[in-house]
Image (tube, rainbow, N blue to C red; front, top):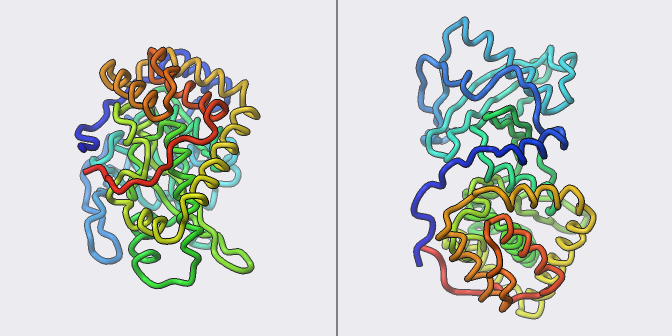
Length: 354
């Protein structure tokens, strides 16, 4: 079966979504925009510690542009972290601005350094995309992960999400011997798979999520977190929204086959869907405003919308999806399934996307 074949187009932020962002204090008056960062003179390829091309370019600005851009970026960082209090950024400086043409929104990644202790942090400036905003806001409201981002017009400002990249985690933890309980990882993948499907967050292959390792007094715990929200409610295939179907994730899936019984798998699936249902109830007012805006927005093609609602109706054995007219309405119905169908079909499958 074919996976994602084409890059998703960028969808503009609608008036209703802008109103939501303003009410929730996400829309700000930032001192710099995405377009400002495009005024660079040249760039050099950025290599990692092993000498491999990172697919990022480090940008070089003229002296006059650099002073303006670096000061604006420091102020944006203060808005992102401390509500705009610039008194705490005197000891911070911009070490590097990187640019990536590979990703959908052509992001800028900013490395900011504390000159008092040499510790550094990253944040991102991207083109604002309604799909990404909806995906991040759903993640913020419905997952155990809180998301910090801001918008200004067509500019999107995003906090760095820390964690071990999924591909690195697979190579250095799953494919090498480490002292961990494999059932812990398999359990988290079941939960991650369920959240992705319910929220209709697509393309959760190993390059698009990170793994947090949480030491406890007796053993390690894990949490999988998305770092890419561009494919929120766009594709027509329901399998795009289930990480289990990406062959890149097979090492984790194989771990689940070896360590988890079907009964335990269904238990974890039910537990996660009940947690999602509780988060829906506790965030109902804000979530309803978000879904109302999402239902009225165009986030995909009519063909994708028809395909997805048909496949989800088959997956849940419930024709409620067939009444949906937009991707936003499909997301709302998907959340309704948490109460109507607390357990769906088991996720185990040997078939992967190619």
